[in-house]
Image (cartoon, rainbow, N blue to C red; front, side):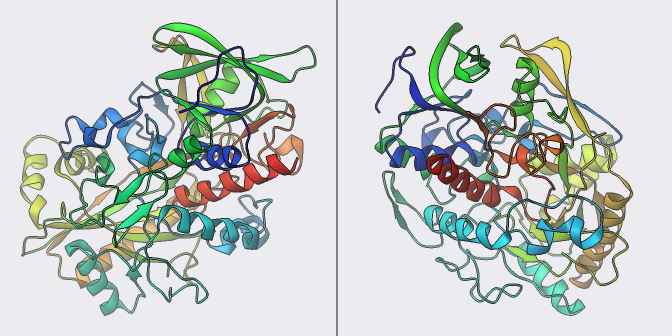
Length: 509
């Protein structure tokens, strides 16, 4: 790997190596730019990933974040990665595309926010990402006749079969889920052989065989091959500027020592918590007063059914089936909609969700865990409207790097509650139609989005539609904090597409 000195002025510093930083870094390096990426976590070897749920969380961001609001969201293994590859080390690789209507929600319904990007433009980048990382899925796709996938779907597991049965009996369309999982062996440029996998139940704990795409085995090796440097175990703590206010470099901690790296431009790609935390700490890019505001999650309620036969949901790809029939339900009393996916789960994760989301403890919890092998679930991914009352703020408590800890407040509104009620009813019907003897609801949210949203009007957001700061012309943000709305689709694929688009806009400028 090529390396640079701290006093070298590189063209671009990128903070974060996940779904935002990884693709952008590769694109810039391929065009010959001198680029350095900083990652707070280590550079894992593939053999570091394990099916042991007790040691696996080391790939998650476990530094404490404080949750507030009416329904405090869970962090750690729920939504944040730490290591070269960022959140793509632990993501579920569930890669639905955003629905065109989700990008124009306010125009359609009068609430929420529109995206200042055309869906047709975004699709071009979505297709490029799917080919870059290897996404499997059904062709044709029931809700998009023009869509094709390079790889056939991965094999269904038992929870997917049961969801399919329930949907068929209810007249709900369902199909194999798009997933960043290869169903055939693949030679990945600059990485090597990736193996098609079968027993994929532990993919949230990292994947040692390359079946699941992450930036660590796709975009980042390509970036390094083209001259990029990646610095693991390097936590960026400050941003330096010149007299005109333009960024000139960053300060960072490595091995307990504070260092500085000079740069001509800076890209923040730390995600919906770390990016606004750094900006609030440095007091930058906040003329709108919206840094940290409009925090978004996805409604992610689950329904679990108890069946007579053993399900063994720890086997196979956890989310192998999808329905998009509820992206805009005809009987909706809300704006937007939701996806439904089948659920397999590892045992400790299952227990944690039962405690946190179903309120079980003691004998009641142990009785539910006795049913683990007989349980199959379905889960929603629901639209969440932006609200300035859902926000990230800094506290007086300092973390291990000397930075103020973040407190994130999340309170669903009436629209989110209505979506959740509708989804729980439909998901319960699916499991009962498939033969569940009993069902149990687990309430939860997922993903960290929206705290530095993009906008055309500088008073209405933090960055422009290209990802450039409204306030500082050589400061860019390339992560899911820029989402104006949550969408009903999981964010990973969309964020990678935005990363390539932002890189192209930087190069064009």
